[in-house]
Image (cartoon, rainbow, N blue to C red; front, side, top):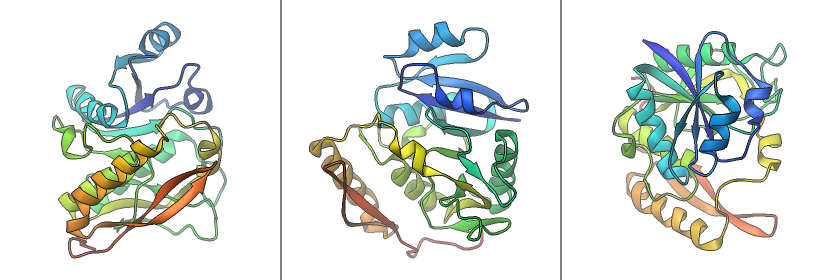
Length: 250
């Protein structure tokens, strides 16, 4: 069975990620928000197959899990649509996308998890070797997961933001841990500086906070750890907890 790449896009084209990275080993498809579906279909016709997704992070993520299952994939790799060159870092430089995906596949196989990602740092002295099971959060910009026709198990359809927090917690409850490629880092800086496509109004922020606390607080896998301010708006800090459900071994 194959591994496929799904670029989840809400922004108008051209898709930065597709200009920054390409793969010769893995099929790449685009899951487009309905507002940009027609434009992406015209722009990428003949190069990448474009599928219509849903409005917002919850419906889009559920659609991605379902799409990967419908396409017969063993694993699917999610990429944000705004990744610039040199997003990925290892001790030797800036690895290409094929290598990153290959390592993600090795990681999810070796750690026996359903969800895995790379290190949340580009400091080469902090990068380690190998793959690990962890209770830490997996970054939403690039990760690998097992497909499912029940994508709602891993993201609430009404979740307005913080999809990476929800997915990390949901997969942890299912597998006891998530997986981490310790020797590849992800540079969050350039992507973070781009204009977010997620709602940043106070109501959406508070709704996501309350939903995550209600769903996962009782399980002790994630907790609200105060607020941080970005651009005059406040956002929750999330702390992933080891908790009783964490299993260092499968």
